[in-house]
Length: 469
Image 1 (cartoon, helix red, strand yellow):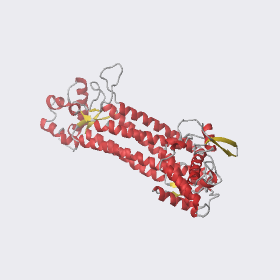
Image 2 (cartoon, helix red, strand yellow):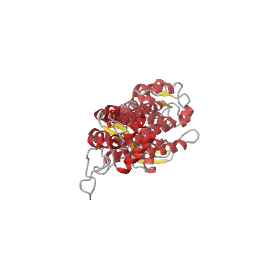
Image 3 (cartoon, one colour):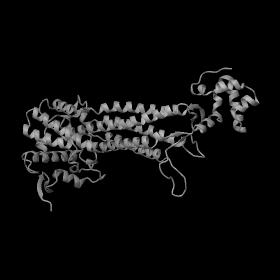
Image 4 (cartoon, one colour):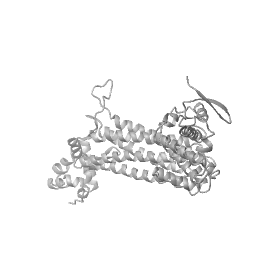
């Protein structure tokens, strides 16, 4: 049988099992908000970030002379436990909740207070010694503590996602080098275009991922502007003079993240533009990676009745009824992950737009959306890299045969034969099933075999130069 302690707030009293480190306000939130079924503990970087926020606040309050050093020290030691990843099971509030994140902030305040009480030799709930509001939340409001912790965690998650993108980019670049001499047909609108190399195609994938890494690094820096010390709505009410600057410096030193204090705390407290920017860059990345996966599925289609220029690693049987069928399951799962991220961008957009007056109360769903998008896309990138891209092989003979039997290669003869004559040859080839070579060299003798060999040499096809008659 659990023992209980009685806690109270201005709404009444509640019995809390004594083994729990959270208190009455967290218990109320647990009763009120069961939406996702996903507690904030599932985002350990978020809890760690709150540990840094509460520790920096205690240090700043001590420096300003408004918090006793022994209480500040106990709070700091308690926060160190959160930073180390301990007591995650005590963070139980749902990721999506009403109240602009107050329940999350109080969950942290209560856990830190009770840990500090134990450090000082007191019992849980003896808040006359260390109080969740009066001491742990001193010089703070949910209005500044929640978004600051959110931004610290978001910065780390973006860093982690970038690492997965760098692995993906490297894998594409290495395949580009491997396939540098594999001649293939390029296509536009799913129709034959002009020759290229498979290596150039994969280098293009690498370059587009590199661009997204650059955009994410830019967006990451927007997250570094914080409103710590703004307290309620950006007024800095109840904070001692100099506190915003001091707490920001402590956060910068504790985390190693280059946080800066916003110039206008009123604006910074209600503005969610940086989240919209990050979400937009995430959507951009998801769209482009999904497009690449579409290309991989097309290029590997077949194996007998499709394009079949490349082979994807065979990961699992593809049908419960069709023997021998293997599906491109890795690109497919990445496609679906991208669809989710694209959808969450709309959620972030609407939540940011829904802010009213001096505070955006929809920040919990923004946090949930960005955290989940970053986690899912990071997992998807690693899956795509190690279970697909690294194992891709080329069907060189099929690629070369498609080039030389393509109608599209007539484009290379434009400078010699002219557009009208080239179009006539293409039309005849399509109608008769003959090759461009047979019509131009053997039947019509429009160019010599030597000129044909010059135009369609491997070197000229991969590095085209102007060849006139």
